[in-house]
Each structure stands twice: as C-alpha cells, then as structure tokens.
Image (tube, one colour):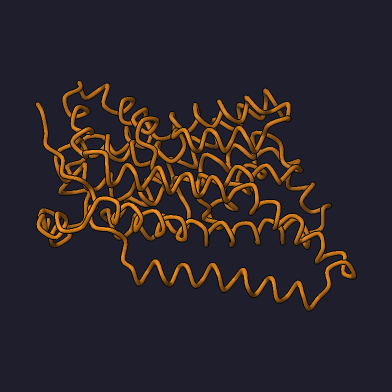
Amino acid sequence: MAIGVARPDISPPQTGSSRRATLVVLGVLAAIAVGVRVADPERIAWLQNFLIVFGSLLVEATPFIMLGAFVSAAIEVFVPASTFAHLGRLPRQLQLPAAALAGIAFPVCECGSVPVARRLASKGLAPSAAVTFMLAAPILNPVVVASTFVAYRGRDSLWVMVLGRMGLGFLVAVAVGWVIGVTRKEDLLKPRPGDDDVDAEAVARESRWSRFVSHLTGDFFFMGRFLVMGAAIAAAVQTFVPQTIVGKVANLPVLSLLAMMGLAFLMSLCSESDAFVAASFTQFGPAAQLAFLVSGPMIDLKLGALYAGTYSRGFLRTVVVTVVAVTLAGTLWLQVVFG
C-alpha cells in the first residue's frame, strides 16, 4: 500500500539557536587562542601535547563536518520526502533491512535522523522501520564511511574498521527495529501539536537556497561545537590520564569495550568526525574502537534528550539495552578474532 510522506521538518533551523551555537564555537576557539598566547606552550610540555592532539583532531575532522552538513541540508531542502514512501510497500520482513540500507542513499547525521524518523512514522511507515533508518543512517551514510576510511588509512585495521562499522551498525539497527516490533505509532511517538499543520505559504515564500544556507550553517555549527568538545576531551584523556591506567583498561577484554562505549556516550560526537577521535585512542584495539564507533551514533547524551522528547517512555531504555547488548556481542567476537 502506497503511503504519502510529507517533508520532514521543513522549517529551517531557528536563527537564534544558530547564532548562539556560532558564538559558543567561536568563543571557545578564541579562549583557546588567548590561552595559548599567554601560556607559551613550548615551555609547558603537557600543554604542548594537549594542543597537538586537539589541533590535529580539529584539522582532520572539520572538513567532514562541513561535508556532512552540506549533504544533510541538500537532502532536507531538495530531496522530496515522498522518496521514502516506497519502503511502506515492501513486505514487513524486508522493511527493516531496506530501511537500514536507505541510510546509504539518504545520509543524515544522528541528530537530523530523529525528526526524519518521527515524520516517517507519523505518516504511515512502520515505526520499527523508521527507528531502524534513524539508527543506521548516521553509520552507513557515505560521508561517515569516507571519514572512517581517512581516519584509519595506513593502518592494518583499515578494512576491519570500515567494513566492521558498516556491518555491525547494520545489524544493531535492525536488531533494535526487531525489538520495537509491531509497536503502533500511537504507542511509540509522543503527541506533538501541529504534526500535520504545515504552513505551505510560508515555505513557498522562502527560496530553497535561503533554506539550504540556513540549514547548512545551523547544522555545521551545531555539530562543530560537539566536535570541539569531543576533541578537547580526547586530548585531555591522552594528556592527563596516566598511560598505565589507560593501558590496564585497554587490556581487559570486556571492560575495554564498555569503557569505549561509555566514552562515546559522554562525548556525544557527530558520526562524521568520531572516527578521528576513536583512532586517536591507540592503546585500545580495533574491537574497542569499533564499539565506540557503533554505539556512539546511536546512544549518547544529546540523543538521549532527543529520544526523550520524541518517543514514549521506555523507548530510550529499550534502545540503550539493545544497542549495548548487540554491540558488545559483536565486538567481543571481533576482539577474539582481531584483538
């Protein structure tokens, strides 16, 4: 049965929020620049090490943040949301794998995938398929695959990380969709006034390019502030945490995996840039880094807030338990095989 799907979240990001995000990012960078100028890092070894790690992560990851924002804005403005409608015509047993693979053709970041999934479910797509798409798209999309490849190029674990992230991410997303099962949209989605009210005249008055630029800048600075925070945390861990402690945790089979998943949850990185942060934790093996890269785009602090505001009570718990369990099982197997 064909379904009509309205464009998700057609209104551009709020200008005030974009400006605040811009000021936050610029303020943090300015504060760092002033601090560097005053402290003279060449005389302070720990500061020099911190800045080297922090700066290298920013330089490597920022282009992918921009590329991800560009692609996400282009999809939001120029790709008709009805393109997703064919998923609703597939047999139910094929909807979950197809929804996961749709992330390859419709690359959106983890934050952007939440409102997209909600709109798809509210307009008739099976909620389990919408959730599967929401979790898979931030991992399977080409921008993330490319950034993972660049982050691990030259390493023996390159293809383990690239293909392992795609394969395990696919399996975890489908597993969560399977757990959601035949839950009705009325039981899954929190009611939100105005879901079906779209101001078509207001949209028509605003040019597509104006909305594209608005989405592009809003997405870039929103993701950029999390990159700055994540790079700072990664640099601090590698600078201040004694390597003996890190080494002990990294050598514990299960604890190393859980530690990296916990770190991904706290850092709340964007999937377009998290591979560079994960690759910097060289003390941890490929399996632990893979746990970071698979669980992070599905469950973190910022997503927890989005899930809580979008879905019914109990959804966040279901996603966390399923993602951790399947990711842990998959990475344990990889840890035995690849170390």
